[in-house]
Amino acid sequence: MNQDINSLAARIKRLEHQNRILKTIGSVLILVMAAFIVIGAVSGSNKQESVVEAEAFVLKDSEGVERGRFSVVNNTSDLTLNDPDGDWKLSLKVFGDGLPQVYVNTTVMGPGIVLDGNAPAIGFFGQDGRPIATIP
Image (tube, rainbow, N blue to C red; front, side, top):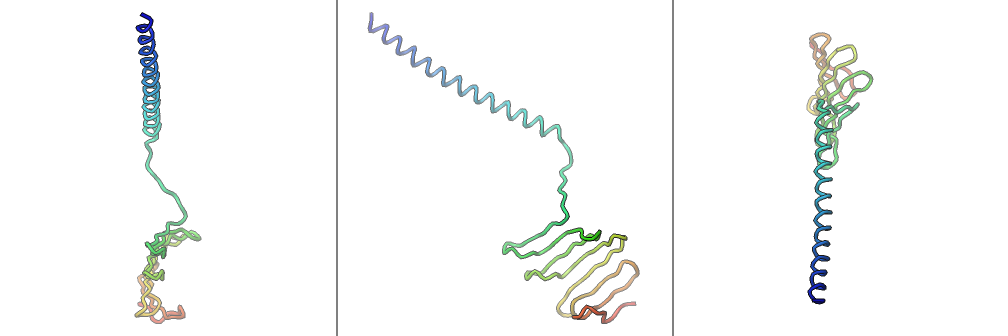
């Protein structure tokens, strides 16, 4: 009879241990589910447009060379695209007064062409930055 009581006590002890483990696992699962619900409710209540704000965005290739930049400097919006060496080749600008300009930099014709939005005009510039020709 003493052996039956000891056997029964051992089984009860083992069941109580298993019960504590199951309660702990259940409590952790309830806390995790509650956290997901709270996180979902908080993020769901802030349904605003995703906006990224910066003064400049820089695009770099896998080698770390700057290949493009979108920035605002001195009240002028500027989108610049560069070649694989990092030299600028195309720049679109809108100045603070609303004047748009397009700059194209080619090595064949010199440093560039400017399309001026103030008046229909195209300017060709030499290596020193001085105008070579303008139309009209």
